[in-house]
Length: 249
Ligand SMILES: NC(=O)c1ccc[n+]([C@@H]2O[C@H](COP(=O)([O-])OP(=O)(O)OC[C@H]3O[C@@H](n4cnc5c(N)ncnc54)[C@H](O)[C@@H]3O)[C@@H](O)[C@H]2O)c1
Image 1 (cartoon, rainbow, N blue to C red):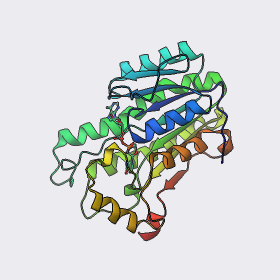
Image 2: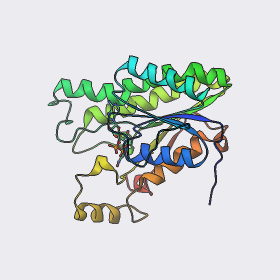
Image 3: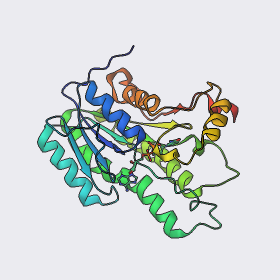
Image 4: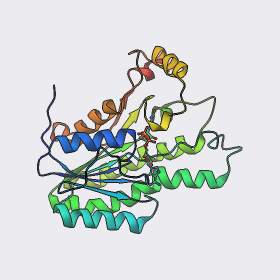
């Protein structure tokens, strides 16, 4: 059993109202960190606001909202060490081939999956510099690593740009001890995948070499590693967390 100690450290987690973001928020709190969780959704009932937890409900595409949430968290907690960009959207049925996609859908997906990452990073980096370093993890998808017969072009384009941005951030701030890495989840059972029937879940589990779909906790554990000092010399990488699914492509 791996035990992390994040006492005295402060993290920003986007998508804290969803599957993986909530799992990471809970694990960070359990390991002693203070957390600013950001999401469009209402605060999950399992999260209690208090001395070590703030929940900011709003749209990550609104830069002023993001900046204020981060400034307020810094004022409350005294420092910012980590940023986990987990919020994301896949507009099933609307996100299709570039040949047919409604460009308003394209723009919204780009704003949520990519531009929001710019907003949070711009707000957090000055405080990470003040703290003498920091770590970020951004969520991509294994879909970026292959083609797709049923394209979701805005999703994969936005997530591919997240990879490029993460590497650029890693390079820009490496000498200030600020690390930036990407996690590529495989198929994971979260609210994003609510559309799956029991049959779908079973078929997917059978297809994954490890014979199960991912749990939000699997991804949260990988994020804990990439934020923690256990990965203090790891930056600019993409970590695939998919039960071996990419072995099949
Ligand atoms: N679940 C999977 O199978 C899977 C696979 C590959 C990649 N991912 C990626 O992992 C990340 C987490 O996914 P998840 O499965 O936990 O999804 P989820 O839908 O459970 O959580 C995503 C959260 O982001 C929030 N969000 C969306 N747009 C927002 C906005 N504009 N402002 C603020 N919050 C916003 C949502 O409200 C939601 O709570 C996403 O980036 C997703 O693309 C998921």
